[in-house]
Length: 300
Length: 211
Image 1: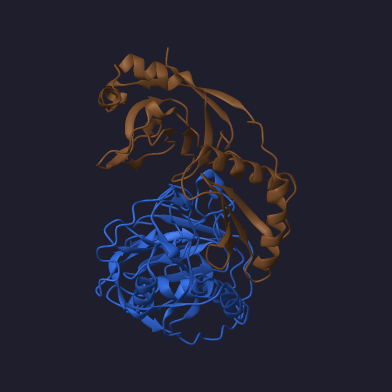
Image 2: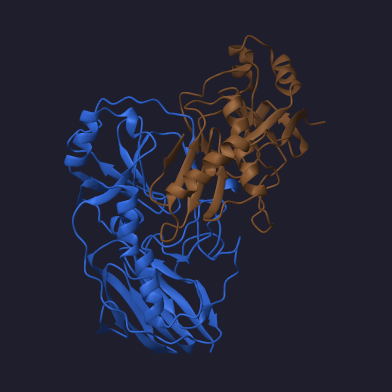
């Protein structure tokens, strides 16, 4: 099965992703990979994806045309609207597309990131073992950059079998985190305030990090100077010198010297990534053991 | 001190501030874990004063891992530098616009600063911040200067940077608050090569004036 797709419209920061390139932090390279891993995986099962790579699109969506061939596609993540040749289809969902078909993913009601996966395999070179794009490091995808109108993507090889995917219940409630490396540098009063206050997601967000507004002034007047750098992981909540909290995401810098009060648990990072600008966000501390139970109780 | 960094990693920290001894202990532990891996540890990242150990939170018990690592800490012996490399640098001028100010603030003329900067071989303390970006140290106390007050939004690949008793080499274009003192043709990052960097923590670096 071969097919050719042309990108006819791309919102900002639509990228090729796969499970990423973990294991290279010691070379100064963060792993990248989907902002919402669960949704990326579900889109793949809907498509019967034989390959590991797919498209991550952002709130403005993406439009693609099948130039030639025929292919199965699956979509999932947040809530967008999908149309094929102008006809609305289910979200999440999937379809078999033929030459000439135009697939449009239009902005929807919820979330920041959606995923498009295909039955056949995207023909792209692996860089350091992965096709995931890091625009920060200029690696992967199409020359390490975001997708743009006019790009062509080729697919080839056998297709997998699409699977039914149970729709996910939307989780609500505070974002759970484990107290961090530098939590002890903040006073007990401040830590109490941190877990009772509401923060707000701002529009200053990308694959590297999400800046929060501290409307309650939890960190106002805090002046912890920058510290010796330590390795950074996705989900780390760091506090800049001016008191701004930033949550580091998949394309994070590999090391950082700002104080980190905590790290969002693995089970909640996808959900956090989907919070739109202006969404309120509260944090709840859990133990590492609790975080592991959350993860292990979840279907893979 | 072994602390969790989230629910999928442990951080072994040897100090709260940068020191030669803490960095040597980092290198020793990383070498020990490379020579004899601890089952369940899927990534070992030596940093300036800490070693990050990633594990699979679905399968591994961090308490068990911390126990294993604790045993290693007692056994880990200092490591000898694995290799040595000369890095040729064009100091000052357009390649290093901060050289004059750095020298002046240290009470030296440019030539004398460069001579002292290059006099002592440095050690690669860690790779971090950006692909292939290496921190090299340590300079003697009389060559210690804090970072600049302002950040340059972009310095080119090959920039040689100076601050905090260290010299760093940028392998890609980066923003930086360090003093830009020169440029080298050496690039410590090649994405299509395995491994993608040439230098490893612990390597010895000798800076030279580009002939």
